[in-house]
Image (cartoon, rainbow, N blue to C red):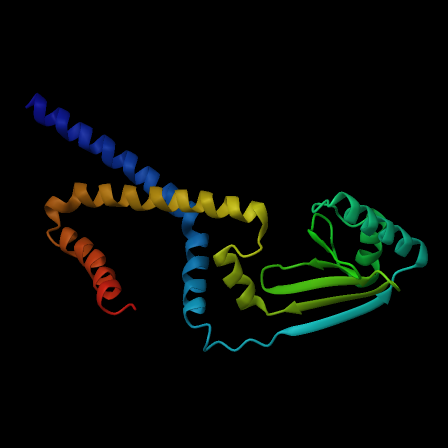
Length: 215
């Protein structure tokens, strides 16, 4: 009797603990799982979902003093072969104020006749180029809409370090959710005979699809 009581008490303890971890991880994952489920559908049907990119082109001329500073920076880059050299701070400020282009912490392509900065982001793309001869500057920005924005978040495309950390933490929470769910299933399986056939079906269907129909 004591052994049965001890076993029952231990089972109740583990079941309670698993349920706590399961509901906490599910609460953490809820919004993220909805986001990834919806964007999984939109990515799978990207060809049927029409996107209308909005392209905005802004132009300007870099003031002479700033152009001279940029030319000196280009010359020093050529001599030092510094691939990490950013744009001068005053040029960055002018581009941000006049063309709406934020080039801070962005890689710069230093060419013979121009500088080019790629500005990709979730849901769109952008770039800036400045001619070294006359200071002609162009900033083109493409916005592909909210669906593209969330699709890119799903893929982690150009979303930055903070979003990368979020995806990693979210993936860990999903693992906790699934593993605790598996143990809860195991503890209830004795009274629910369809538990393991349903789990097996969840494994068998994608496995057969991958083996037989995915090329």
